[in-house]
Length: 434
Image (cartoon, rainbow, N blue to C red; front, side, top):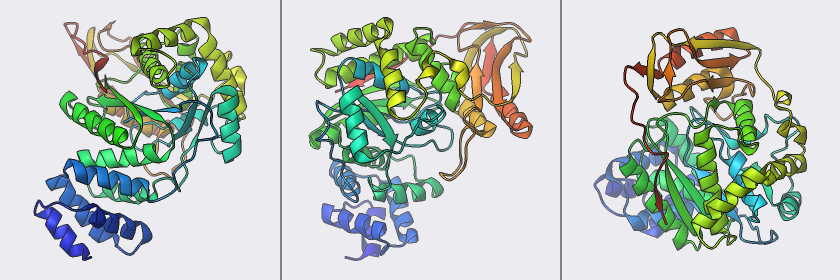
């Protein structure tokens, strides 16, 4: 096959066959197709798009570019949960233990954060002693014994996605429906679970800014997952302001524990119970999604979810005492408050701006190799809809470096809009795709 011919055809709006997509993905992964040609192909896709068949084929080729995890040694129906990325989204730390407490095995591979969104692996590594790299047999044993284990995704899962995403990130080709779908689903389908619950974010702090685009993405991912034999559901959720009050690794672990203790913010609590309930239903431990949500709520109020979190942390080498003593979690040494410059109602808190400010404190990274400060981040004291008075603290920023704190505070101050009238707040859950 001729690479230039394939690029030209896609540039001019033509369609590619599965064999041609196999040639492109395999050639780029193995190194016979250079970066500059794959970059040209990605830009052609960005402008011309892909049809359903091309998207399905691209996903399958990326999935098959590396190892396919075999979770057959784990008993039961394994259900994974994936979020398309948001600010303050620590739901995995909550829904995993809640679902496991209700009998659903959670054998999850998660990634690290990049840019303004956080990664589950980084958050878990903020827990003293917690190991996110485990031998395969130990991973299986933990899930069979305690119902849950979360490890870092290996480089052998969908390696084509790793190489392609690195190019998309530096060639302005990230925001394309087919490329986003293939990136997410190739990894999820290769991770071996029997079903996947997708949390598709929409709003200022999400890749999909509009509910319409989020629904299109959700529908495409659900369709591709079902075509691969997976049980699927997607929940479209709001990301116009940060989820919960905490943004940053140890701060988010702290808040996740507070939710499991029954003392967390209402938005993250509500969403976590809803997501866990749907995982419970997908896993066959509830007759309906509503029954699953009820079971998740019971696991929260009874404390069984918190106990499962202790088992989860202990099983992976972490200190389970963090579930009862939040002071065991790291907190950066320097702090700075952002004060309200006037009285009124908070009309909005831009999620992406808060995410970028948190990254600047040291809580995030710009490249995968960057070190992060687990104790850095932002703690919001108010959310959209709250009444505040002039001079009142809106948020506190944490960092181990004063210079980072100063630059982050300038960014964070831009995120909050205060007006005279209380705003009409959007629903937390915009819809469900099955």
